Image (cartoon, rainbow, N blue to C red; front, side):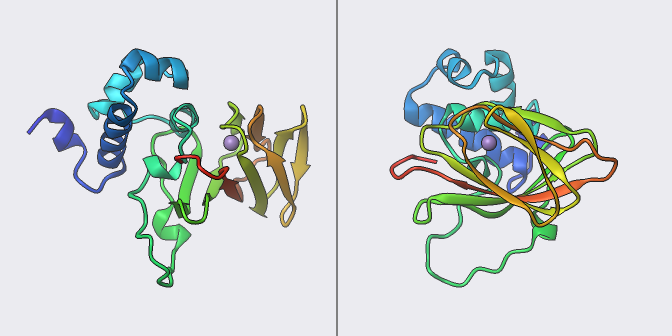
Length: 199
Ligand code: MN
């Protein structure tokens, strides 16, 4: 048993993440250097994540996902069974903070290649600001505010969304999310990937 495996029991977010990152890099035949280049995450940090020595923030996970042109949820949970069986999910059961960065993510419906999308619930702590690197070409995001209000950076401006308001935007360009209020904001984020993307 390496120290890493005792730190990350099978089934934990960290255990899944380390395995996913290692296999994805092997699949692509990417060196750590190449992966660092593609993701904007340092080679040292990628190595630490692969060895289970570092628990990345959501922001870092998102950089890795964008760099590999994969869904965020594929780094958080095992892919769901691809059957047409009815699937009940609970955000309360799924909500987790991969590492402390003031955003909670619940992969409500993780990416499924038959559907082409992942459906996340995001909780933005007061003061949370995230500027997102562009996703792969053809990626579209839908944001619907469920609780509180938040701002979304689209078309080069911060736009306020109140509870019940939603926006759809092309996410293959810079975009962002922030919560400047004193209470958490909760939104649904449905990310649709273009046909043929590995995600
Ligand atoms: Mn995004």
